Image (cartoon, rainbow, N blue to C red; front, side, top):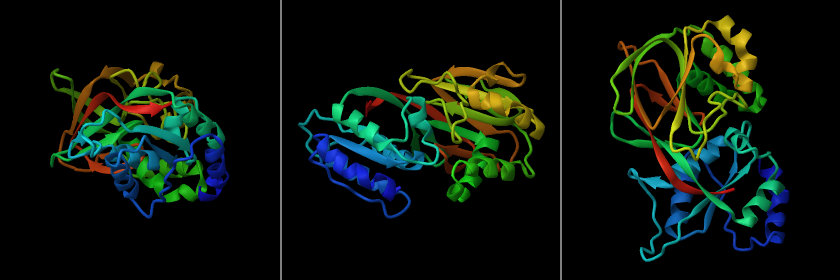
Length: 296
């Protein structure tokens, strides 16, 4: 990624973006710290250069202690915007917006400075800590596949296929309980995967929540039930082109918040957001409407 962006540095300067502070991450979660420091120092924008993993960390850096990070200058009305230069394996959030993995296109977009407010998802666990996502959060098989896929990033988009195959090994559909908004708890039987979309794509181009929109102020929740391994093979093309909502045992609904818990005590239902493994159920997912200014 460093090599792919090397030509973009000079292009930044010729695009009129002269006041730039470049920070390279040195390990996991470093982008979170860099982002928080930049916001507190009053940066006009934090630009995430990389894939969905980098973007995920930068988005989490916009928050601390369950609240948005603020400029140290309390009298300032300025808010730090989010910019994206997509260069990752999947770059699925950029795909929702119709953006290419082209640094020159991204820099031209950033130089224009047009902003739009977007939503962010917030995930609360049992211990009270909050986690944030901008793209898609999911549980069970798809989350397990993402967990394994992260080990094979050197194979490019093929890592998602390898991860899915590994996840299928010894996979069992499981019963869960969900609570949407202030509604009643309901049982979802034999769940294969449940996906909570703030945006449309995950897994390197799979259009899993095709009606999601990061400015809609709610999630699209898609549930796959009682899928067998051969169902995925037969319906994979529908999952990728976003026509799977008409398939038997696939349902979709809108939600501003959803609580999910396991029925039983296996403690083995994976949870991930934006491709990052977060642990296991139970979790509560809530929308934070219009909380970040995106340079678009």
